[in-house]
Length: 238
Ligand SMILES: C[S@@+](CC[C@H](N)C(=O)[O-])C[C@H]1O[C@@H](n2cnc3c(N)ncnc32)[C@H](O)[C@@H]1O
Image 1: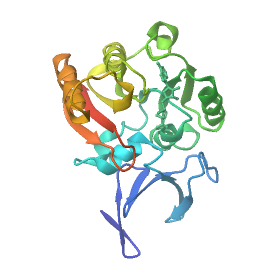
Image 2 (image 1 turned 180 degrees about the vertical axis):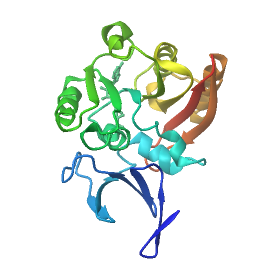
Image 3 (image 1 turned 90 degrees about the vertical axis):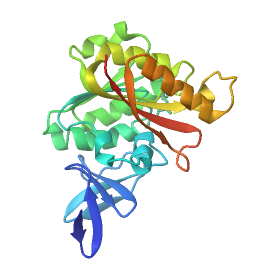
């Protein structure tokens, strides 16, 4: 915990700052915004406001009961992000993982099957080296898996489509190191479920993950930022 003119803040990583209840990431591309977020200087350094209502990862950081920084990948590493969307969360991950001109040597393989998302990601990648946009289906590893010759230690999935859990487990088996962190954002409405309501569905998914060789460290409800969503914080153990 540090102090800035009487205000308390936490550095969750070298680039991610929690100021009061607001998350900020040090802007890797000074002066540029990605989705209309505000810019602000702290100690002469420019940060971008990370809006948790626009980013499941941001929402999970705000809602976790554990150390927020444990949800982040290690800077300078390679990560896999499935369901990249328009790059909102990815831009903040890039600030942390790569920094300006990718001084840290990080790499984000960002997969999405929507061409309109790829357009935005490709535009983003022009000023953010280390970001690798891929037009592809998270289920069809053969088409893009060559981009990841080595397994990664951090994998995030937010595809909001039915069969999310199987897609996630398949991707983790193929691309996540044993012991690596796998984050699954689950949208209740995307699952075919005839059971007893959302909590029972989330409980069933947790069981399924455990039966298939994952530990589940936390199920973070994103209520208030993304209703009917949970982020499962898992580790691959076998
Ligand atoms: C909720 S959005 C992702 C938002 C993004 N994660 C963020 O926080 O900025 C879900 C995305 O998953 C993509 N998607 C859905 N099914 C997919 C699949 N099978 N493979 C890859 N992407 C998929 C959609 O095109 C959409 O862009």
